[in-house]
Length: 278
Image (spheres, helix red, strand yellow):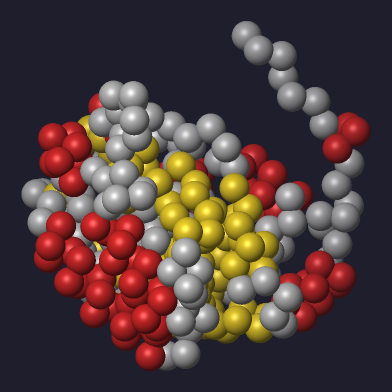
């Protein structure tokens, strides 16, 4: 395992026009790669954001989709590992789509697939969001090997479910990736709080790439892409515009935190009891 790797998070303002989003992503991935990043993380639904009909129109199969081909070409061309945020995935014999994060290795090969487990069905800031209208939840937590580091893959609303992150940490994850599309209303109060909490309670790094600005008419996204260390210190945070942030993650730093403050080792799972189903 590499002792230190450089992580870049790409912040975008994606909308329904897939061609425009691909052009924006290509430019920002190149900018991220130029910083010497080993790993580049894109935001949630970087290639297309829209209502149910638009998501169905933009959805792709992983083996034939133009966005997947683009990700593979960028990863190969820049020699980077690319955590491809998420895209809406169409699968055979399924009426609904999946919100899917894929990882491409530096050769452009598919290295991991994670389908978002928790769907965003809420009322926030005077708006109603029903992700389940178009999408179905994933069913499996995923730890991928990225540049020799075990990395827990998550997407956006997953951030509010600490049990998922604890499972990923117990399965060996040292870094969590969080492609996201947080609303302005929830993000201003909860985004940094949740990122730092997931980092501190699991003593892991967190790399969160976000959407920013008006991605849907009248609905603003919070942005503030962030990279957080295992002590909860924000190493990098984006401004309120599309762009790139970069930070180095250091395994010795993580091990030092866990050695001095052994919270994970102090767990007592034999004393924990899940409530019986109602």
